[in-house]
Length: 231
Length: 279
Image (cartoon, rainbow over all chains, first blue to last red; front, side):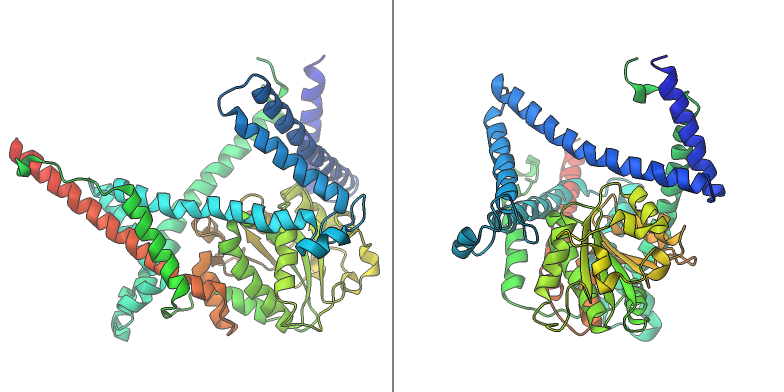
């Protein structure tokens, strides 16, 4: 019973959603609208679950002094500082438990939460993403080696797209006459992106789509049961 | 002896240093490389440029500060263009941090458009969890998904929301997306199910995967891919900004990477030749 009821619910809900796509009228439209509400509510609870999980994992790592446990203290401190600042004085448009925190805002220029967000969080995230430029440069130097026909093809395409995707590409071949404009680097890059890339991407999209249909059918029909947990 | 030695790899710290200089210097000293407008950016621009004033449009901020350097300039350019065209902009976010990206965009344009009023010319409805399902729900009943704005004000009290019940009341949807949920979800639901004109902007790494949706069926009407597209859009609206400045840095960084790739290959062939000579 413990496994049968979830399987029946999955089957009925799956059929209902599929049917509503073909018959978007009463009662299917109304029922699916209700299911959409459920989904959004459950998803919102997932955020809470994620937060609790973060706290639990961090506390356990600190308690048992696992490797790099000191970083988890930092995680928890950062988490609670942002949480409490948000709760006490709110954010840009919303007030907190203690109002808008005008006294603090007059000193630091912003509400405490916004101050930390704009001056620390935003820059930390942008820095992490920007570091990619350095690692990509180093990785490209080591990995982009023309060893075989395929790697030559990849290397050639990569260089053309990289040059064509920048202003330097326009500058390098901008002098070409109109009759040879197809050799203009941005045009070559656009061609590679529009035809070979799109063809490959479409193949991936179609393949993934078929895979999703297959897995969805397996779940609806009760063949795939791993989401129920256990063996 | 020297001939038998392998050609040494360049120390990665030298690569890092040169990339740093290559990015930092053009940001300080403008080179001003020419920017050419590509087809997809032109299409997106034409879409934004094509509707009558007071059209209600939806702009979704589906990114966070990590992608801000790449997506924020294009968001600013498109929003600026919409404000110049006197559209009424309804902002939403499928990413939690997108709410702040939206408010930041409008704050940065406040000086240029002092007469534009919140609730009349633009509104920030905030974040809703659920991605594709949320969009689907918006298509059925917009007001039930966003009953209030980020400040808790009932949308019935805002003139901008008068008559907005579903996607058919919108001129177009424009999503700035750094991943999932994002443009793909807007295409699948807003365009494919509810036939709203849809366009978007995305990061350089995501753009190739979005290009198949720019097709004859018009699933996406143009696409802004990466900083270059943002610079092109700035050029089209004649308002050079951070993307235009950043293009010089990006161009030099790409050139440095290409030079290192060439050096890496030369070293590889030199080593292979030496290995063969040694037998």
